[in-house]
Image (cartoon, rainbow, N blue to C red):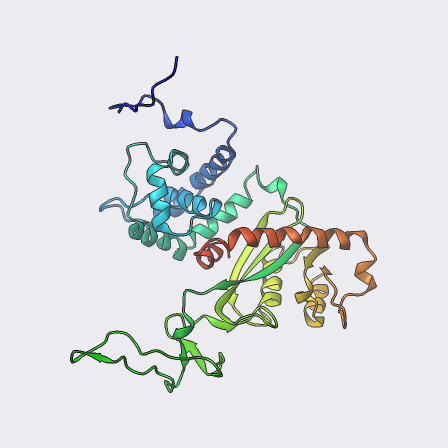
Length: 341
């Protein structure tokens, strides 16, 4: 007998949202680890909130929602709230019931930024890495590092001369009223640099190009340190975009990961890190530089390349690039990277 395609409305639902999530879904393991970590940070959360007043969004739900945004590359808080409203899997992970209302996207952003400014999110990610189910997966000797450009939320039209000489002309008048927009401006053949110009909407963003023949963009740099056993990112950072930021961030991240260790570590990296100063700094820190060699004037010699582990590290380094390929889908990547710093 053919079933009916007519939908009948239900006043009540007796199926628990917990039963709708498959028992083998990977988010179940992640949620269990996350809940253990959140329970250990209960005292940190209490310090951030007053004892009286109207209740805000629970910090546990703020952090679970932020994880969903990263896992599924949800590009904005507005879209995250929209999907939380109808996606039962997301509701279950965050801790919302079927009938619970979702938050306004601006309220969510304001409350989450409060956690970021208090360094609670950084403590949360550090506690995740120290969790008994996660820590055995991490290598404590072999790492890889890489960097990527993060496009700033600023238009090239905002990149103006610091002395104000290149202010755009006023817009034409219409009916005796001055137009509210700036006049048109042609930037071709105009010399602009970070020394003489700055963005009026994001002064910290720098004009930078990835390589020869590439267009210059207002951007920042993101950096990630990955362990080589399972390809998990253990450190992340964001910095100003310049020619030395990648190597400087790599030294700082590996030092934070294993400060003053007596073990011999290795650090894999691409050709951009093949600089004599960087390689010398690594060796002084008792870290073997598994850096890809440049065609000419390489700082890497037979002391490193003759070992079999050198080739292994170069293969593992590709996993960092894959991680950046996922992360670059996030518009708020600078904010999320700052969480892990």
